[in-house]
Image (cartoon, rainbow, N blue to C red; front, top):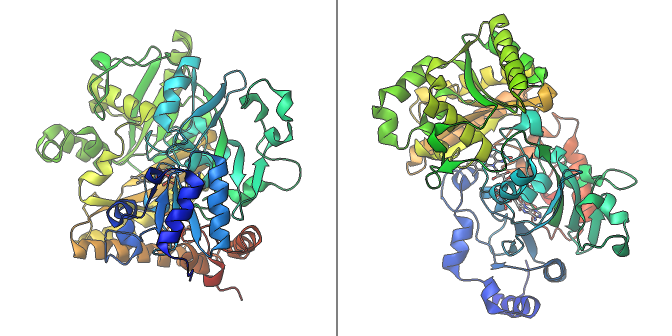
Length: 546
Ligand SMILES: Cc1cc2nc3c(=O)[nH]c(=O)nc-3n(C[C@H](O)[C@H](O)[C@H](O)COP(=O)(O)OP(=O)(O)OC[C@H]3O[C@@H](n4cnc5c(N)ncnc54)[C@H](O)[C@@H]3O)c2cc1C
């Protein structure tokens, strides 16, 4: 335990950051950093708050960050980076020990290379900010399913990365093209091709065209700092990231009306040559076949599964509307194993081709286009939710205030569908006991990525966060997921390994090629003082290796 007094820390932080207003240890403000989605699931349902940081600082540049990081190493303290801070993963592993680096002052798009389709950003740039610029160039970026409000850098460098348009825009860990990385001991590391250029090579301070390769010569550092889940702030601080961009066959700006979060397409009109459908199958097997064929056809801009309950919740403007409006209840009754598909074409001919492909695949796999969704408002709502990702997440919190997820490891589409069946049965048991919101049990969200090369399907669930019994049910359900993962080959899923860090690595490591041995070695080598908060990543002291 560090013997340094908080007043000394505050004074030293002021020396580093210059102004008092960029530092706080006010308990009221610290608690706002500890109050976060899903905290209750990690502390056995006891509290809605996670641990309090020691203090919060708002650095403006990499020099200040390096000084704070070195300070923590020298004083037996820990640090943790936060970009947009949307989930519990930005909270700290230990109470009153961690300096939280809130990176909101580093909020710039540093450069866009439209020709090579690369963008370099700082931590606080979110999806909406990026899209506002990128659409002008006919480009788009992958946005994680949490929405356009979250940091792109946090997603590509540090945390998971599943997102609605993944069939055409990949997964976050596949879109990183180099980083500026303050390592846990305060060393600066430039990862990727840009690190090999001399400063004098370019006229610009940051030139996105230099960031074309994510790895430098030698072993892949990207695999070390990122991998599948990311290090959740447990392996230093990323201060710049280059992100791969994608072509967008759409207008430079969408014609919209209304106010956030209810921004809608003007007169419900889809952009020229864009289309949106909901396709439904009666059997899992047909869904499996149809989904893969659509993904592999190469025509989808977005292809994803949102179960009926969540579609209706997200589409309805309030809970009262959701329960009283027959249209939403009909939707729930009508949809079974469904996929949302969005296409974007460059010409009438291409749009017609896409339409033919969709209809042929549906015909061959016993699917059907859901008529209710063909009506204008629904089509436009679907398109907008996925293209701009501005109001997708409100649905998950609406039913009970609490929401979490489970399963959803990356694998083949067929394997993911088999996992979805298991998830549904596990959840059904807990719903029948009365603790979780009855969402019909099958509330699987996910999609095939990169035209079906790999996929994920996660089982969402909702609970009443104000009711201790419901919070207990949530924990029981997660425990049943861990038990099922020991029994069936369900892979490294969500809600487990990404939540309780070391405790889960002890269970899942031996089941998955002893990955935890390597993770531990990486952490020890790069962070000998364990200064970068290991809470959600791996704490070498808490991992049992025989
Ligand atoms: C309702 C909801 C739905 C979600 N759905 C999805 C989803 O579909 N797909 C998905 O991928 N995620 C999802 N998430 C999780 C998470 O919000 C995202 O992964 C997101 O991309 C990260 O943004 P954030 O604002 O949460 O980041 P932050 O909270 O700022 O950071 C997330 C993690 O990354 C670390 N980190 C952030 N910035 C840095 C940095 N500069 N250097 C080092 N480490 C850093 C943090 O320490 C933290 O552990 C969801 C979260 C919520 C609340």
